[in-house]
View 1 (tube, rainbow, N blue to C red):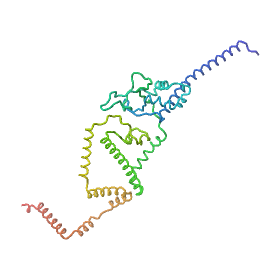
View 2 (spheres, rainbow, N blue to C red; view 1 turned 60 degrees about the horizontal axis):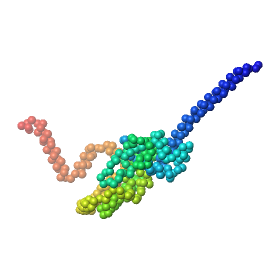
View 3 (tube, rainbow, N blue to C red; view 1 turned 90 degrees about the horizontal axis):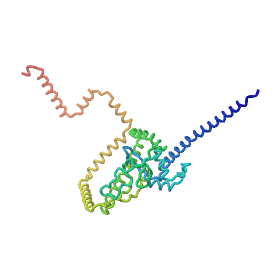
View 4 (cartoon, rainbow, N blue to C red; view 1 turned 30 degrees about the vertical axis):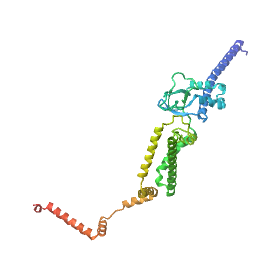
Length: 356
């Protein structure tokens, strides 16, 4: 039985219409996917750039929060030295550095900041290169190289070693609390290791301060060796950098240098005059050695044995006899006399005739 031709035409039109709508839907679905890919590429680009050590950055306080920021000119030089980072952007890899930064600002991956203190402090020739306090730049959120700062707004991903370290800290705390139950050899190793590290740190800080004071008094230069040794936020390479930074401040006046020279001489003379003698030093050393020995020689066995001795029953009669036997004849007579006087006093208070 043949079907009518009109039904076939309607079916063809319907199938062609459904195909066109499916193509339209697939095209509409492809556009958000492309946009999502673009957004992911810029997010990935920002994370890679932030994790790279070639872009110099610092930490500062902005609106009661700590942020990591960099300078605009450093970002431009970083992109010139590392052009391979543009390959992460895929379709947008041909954009200029300014356009890339503006896209990051538009996606709220960056925010432009400005220094809070815009006036020179007394004794300074120019403003600080890396200010410690920032505020959001209200005028225009666009990229600029001239004295412009940009802070990352997304949370930085923590590497694996930081995650492992977060689990290691409770174990280290528990190990420190269990130090009294360590074997004697382990106690000695921990004690001398910690004492050596502490002595090295204090010696380094002392030599560093003496070198700074000597150069400041004699040459009028502010020279801090290991300038980042006390920094709160610094990488391992920056922390142990030996050579100091260039002194950008004005040289001190000769009157202040002379004053601190006199103060240093007086302090040294007072320390020499009031230094402890050999007997006092020996006494202090013996006291400290006794404290250290008490800590090192303590063990759970000694604690348990002392606890058991305290719990043993004591015979009061035997203890009194032993104490009387151990006392001399003079002490025994004095004890008898005290007992006699005590009995007379008790009779006097209890007998009414003796009271009269």
